[in-house]
Length: 319
Ligand SMILES: Cc1cc2nc3c(=O)[nH]c(=O)nc-3n(C[C@H](O)[C@H](O)[C@H](O)COP(=O)(O)OP(=O)(O)OC[C@H]3O[C@@H](n4cnc5c(N)ncnc54)[C@H](O)[C@@H]3O)c2cc1C
Image (cartoon, rainbow, N blue to C red; front, side):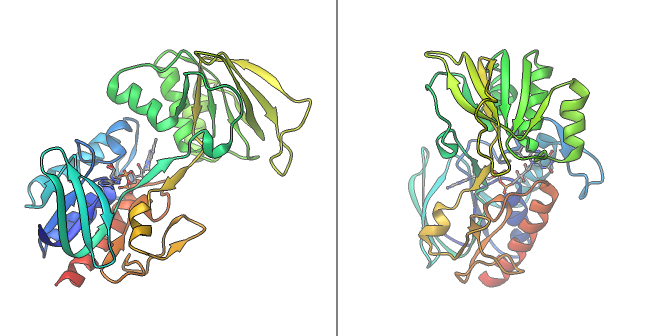
């Protein structure tokens, strides 16, 4: 397959990039999931689009606005298509159940693969390995998309926006959230989320605390939490056992950059994302990157703007 611009990832960054590029050149959009929209279809809370649309939308509403435009645009969309490799001459290999292995020669490529969540292994959380330990995104998907409750008594580790939003979500679904534990001395998320997700629901926030052990054989039974010192080391003698059947890890996101590394794109050690210039072009000419794959964005409107910039300049390169 040949195209002028290939976009990898159909979240808000990829949708905006594909739309901008499609105004002047041919575009192929590759998304590994069945639906477009990236993380947004599972973010059913309000809080999206305040800057671009001047009103608060849910994640699915925000995504649908762009999906509708993509459907009317003539962009060649391939869902359930995972890109497996990218070379620095802008050749992609993808695989899908319908088309099998596909090779795509693109004049320019836009990387918009988003982030993945940090797991228990990455934060070296000791203890047994019972069921009931979830990343926040998995728990969110189970509740909001699959209609399944992961548990009834919940501890949340991490007070970024994702952790705060999940504390409220579990509460609204009838679970008891024992508390949100945060290793830093201040909350990680937006103040509006601390107020609207915790204070409004009387959910306790324990700053300078972390989970230091997981207990249970088949199912999670309890966690041990400890206060930490200024260097984030657990303080002996401060351990408390908190009974719970669910531990939600909201401990950070990592840009999904395997393809960027394959293409030998220069990476920024601070963000774990590609180094980009003001056109969102990476160190490899003709390969652009935008959205959470570059660095974690709190606000989706910024992702959409960056996608538009990448799309326009990728199209210019392809012409
Ligand atoms: C729980 C949560 C709550 C949030 N709340 C808010 C909020 O209230 N307000 C707000 O403005 N923002 C919010 N955000 C932030 C916002 O959702 C993100 O900044 C935005 O979704 C990032 O868009 P993206 O396109 O870069 O990544 P994503 O949305 O993650 O999309 C990336 C896409 O790329 C696809 N992909 C990855 N690798 C491949 C591959 N190899 N081949 C093909 N496809 C691939 C993925 O399947 C995915 O669909 C929230 C985020 C989360 C996680």
